[in-house]
Image (cartoon, rainbow, N blue to C red; front, side, top):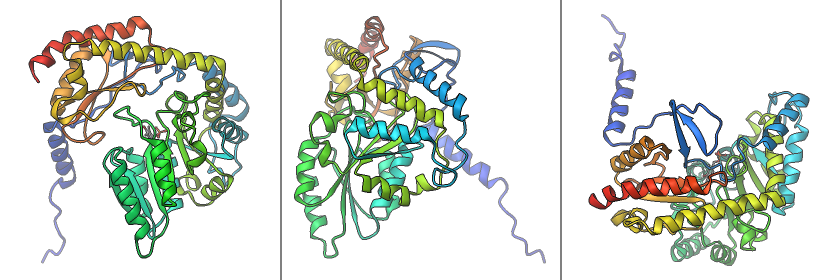
Length: 418
Ligand SMILES: *Cc1c(COP(=O)(O)O)cnc(C)c1O
């Protein structure tokens, strides 16, 4: 008798094929596009020259000679690879320099860098809270914050986007639990897919009232707000009341990596307990050198000028958008939309709703030479697909006008198919 179980033929491949087919049917299939130039406002994608309105390189630093020169110099002295985790075979002087400059820049006692912003979140939240504790998250918080909170095994509670009443009620509930542990509130300062801001002053008051801690992800605010462009917390004058300030080096800073700024005890604890820091090879020293050059630039007078240019483009785009016949409706996105406010960051979502519709619009724009991919579930809720327009200081006024003109031409088709 044959006792060997016979596996269903190709069940693995068949299963994958089925899942991919259903993603395609739902308009949720994704594909890599080949970028054939450096990152910038003008790029070549899959053989086609495009104006790029999709990058988070807000200040145009990703391909700036300042950063590439710093990385080249560091590479000559330190080589490329880091060799091991920073706790194992020595921590590069460049990582230390970068962290000193970040702490100075943010006005905190200390800073700690990670290989990505994602890794910063994944290491930090589980290091700070555990099963006895509670994490309270904004509904639109970035995936890395959600994943990190889940990994921590703390009780999770979610408040509707920027809803202070609900946050208040959740804080009261968490503080009143019989075995009340620590409470960590987690939000972004500028939201990545909506471009709006969190009411941070009010959130700081609330969390202090209940003795909770606050972690703010400044991924899209670093480089854009504050008198030295440290972020929205600094701009609002509440940075010293935020226990954990998170950011990434890979957006306005144009480099690569993530960071946590706060007290010396916080970074000391993370060095000891953040698993994504401990069990992962240090980022290449040239990446730290490039990031350090970016921090210096952003805090400088030239950085101020670059940032000012970005805000001019944002103003220009918003003003142009307002004068489109269906402009208000594109932005508000009809019944599914209406949540975003505008002019609060370099991210301006044109909410279209249905996934296929956003894909269609992205295709049309692409044909006209604009690269603005459709953002869909799970990056945003189902039925709230959008074109996420991002502006860069490196866009010229003429390029922004060209995009407005093209949107104006497509506008009539939007108005015709609400
Ligand atoms: C991009 C992003 C991150 C992740 O940062 P990386 O350095 O790209 O890993 C974290 N939080 C938010 C809000 C982001 O938009």
